[in-house]
Each structure stands twice: as structure tokens, then as C-alpha cells.
Amino acid sequence: MKPNCDIPSPFYSHLLRVLKEFSVDLSQPQPSKFYYTRRLQNCVSPIQTRSEVHWNRRFGPGVIWKDIWKEIARSKNDPVLRDFDWRTVHRILPVNSRMHQWNSRLPSRCVRCGAQVDTLEHVLVDCSKIKDMWMFILNLCHRIDPSVIGLSEKNLFLGCFSQRGTKDFLRYLMCVGKFSAWKERVSLQFKKDQKINCQIYFKNYVRQRLQIEQCFLSVDAFVSKWCMNNVLACVRDDTIEILI
Image 1 (cartoon, rainbow, N blue to C red):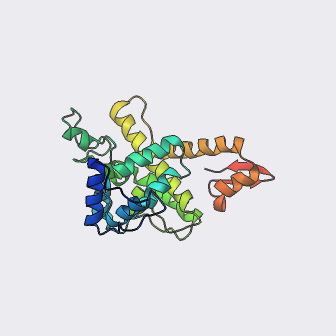
Image 2 (cartoon, rainbow, N blue to C red; image 1 turned 30 degrees about the horizontal axis):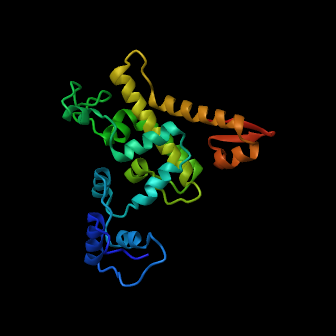
Image 3 (cartoon, rainbow, N blue to C red; image 1 turned 90 degrees about the vertical axis):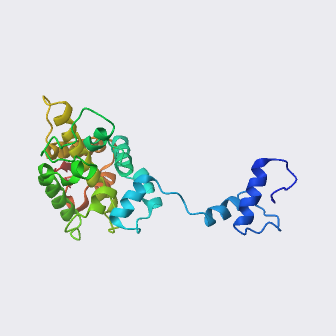
């Protein structure tokens, strides 16, 4: 298929001009109608979202965003967690500092520890009131995969792990941890009569997920998915036992 110069259309005239600017050979007809689209994709650098620019400044340019978005879509997460993970990476959670910029009456300080600026990083990871939960999660991760001896910000916020065999498992725990920290913060901000402890919420959330999947999966399927190193669950006498 060859772009037709005789078609009196502004779109085609603009397309031809762009193709010529990128030195795409127009002399030979091509069998695929997507040939020129692919050539343009190879010539033009993709536009990064504002969140990608922010994380690249924080972590450096080595983040492969195509893989990050695929991992979010294909993760172990249930739909609620998957949506939360997507919002976290896109940096669109309504933290107090962002709401304050939008002229909200909410103060910009953290409702848990009183820090002056309630940023996304502070709410989900850095707040001193949730350190115990993250130490508990780190201990779980180390027991699942002994090579995990610490959690970097890249692990925590983007779920980037080099451990192939346990990557999905570790990413799931990171996401539940962030979601638990967020739920605790929301309870303190808006539901003071129903305060949530993030570590207890984390345990209950994972336990409930395991109990639900226990009802639908065979024992072998459950073991291969959730019983890694018998940390969260194990099988004793052909019976699944949830340990968390």
C-alpha cells in the first residue's frame, strides 16, 4: 500500500509531509497498511506522562514504562488493588498537599504524624506511624525470597523487582501495604469513629484473599500460587492452612 498523493485530503497531505520529514521511503508500495504507522512510531519518541517524568527524576531514566503498565494490568491484584496501583503510579491520589493546592479546606499536614506536607510518598511509605507495618512486610518478603534484604523506593512505589520467580508475589504485597496505609489515613481523616490500623488491615486483607481463593482453586493450584516457602499459607494433611 502506498500513500496516494492524488487524494485531495488535508490529512493525507499532512501525512506525506511528515513521512518525508522523517525520510521514510515512499517510492515502493508496501504490503501492510500499518507499515507507515510503524515507521513513524520508530522515528518519534513517545510522550511521557507527568507521573513518568516525576518518577524518572526520582529514580533515573532506567525505568521501562511499557513493562510497568503491563505488570499493573497483569498482576495478582484484585480489581480494587489494580485500580489503586494504577492511581498510585499515576500520582493522582487525593493526598492533602494536592487537595490544598486545589483550595480545599483540608490542611496540607499529615493527619497521622503531623508532618507539614502530606505528599504521596509520605502517606504511603515515609510516615513514621506506618514503619512497623513496612517492617512486617519486609520480614514476609525476606522469608518468601531470602535475597530481599531491604525495600527501595522503586520496589515500594513501582513494584520493580529483579527476582523473576517471586516478582508477582512481592509486587502484590507492596500493593496491599500501600493500600492499607491509604485506608488508615482515610479513616483518620474522615472516619474518626472507625479508625483503622494499617498492619491489622494488611493481615486481614491478605487473609481474606487467601480464604476466597481457597474456595475456588484446587489444592495444587493454591499451593503453586500462594504457598511459596509456606509463609502465607501451607498444606498439612491435605488441608490448606492460612498462616498470616
